[in-house]
Amino acid sequence: MRIFVSFLLIGFMIVGCSAQKQAAKEDNNKGQDVYVFDQIGNGNPGNEKKTEKIDSASVVNQVDSTAISEKVEAAKKEENKPVETPDIETPKLYFVQLGAFTTQERAEEFIKQAEDLLDTKTFTITFSDEKELFLVQLPPFKDKKEAEKVRNRLWKYNLFKDAFIVEQ
Image (tube, rainbow, N blue to C red; front, side, top):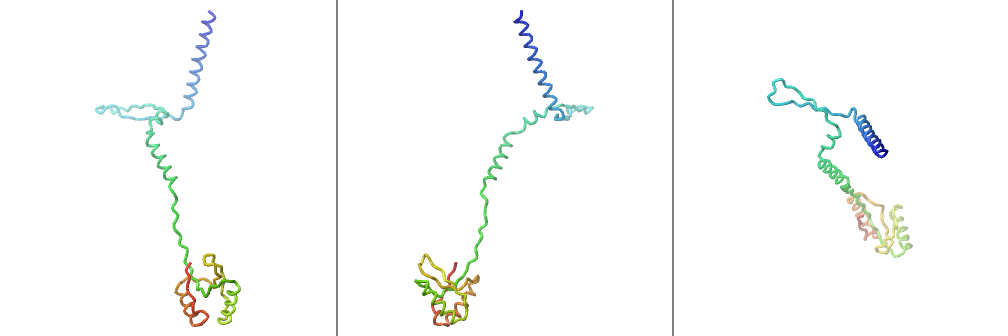
């Protein structure tokens, strides 16, 4: 008998807890119900309308999951798409090269002669790792025609007869 009463009590507790959970679930869903208005029957003279209460959770479950997954995949592809950076063209510079020397001392001697001849101090010495020479050049020009004009004027002097233009 005690066993029977024990099972009976346990049964009531289980049923009571289930009912309590169901009531709590219904309280949580308040305000989330969706009402659908459909016209009943095609030939209904009274055009009576039927109100059907639909649980919002069931509506969410009916959403086409493939459409959602397709949108997610499309978003991922767009996200992983490499960003195209425009090619920024660096402007070419044109240098009038006056000479190339094996030592820096010889390049400096050449510049002293050039400064005396032209009365200017705009020459630069740079070392070329590629050619392993010290290069004597004028400051860069942005326009090739301007560099050509300067080079052509320098050709008038015997010291600069080998001057040429270098593009970088």
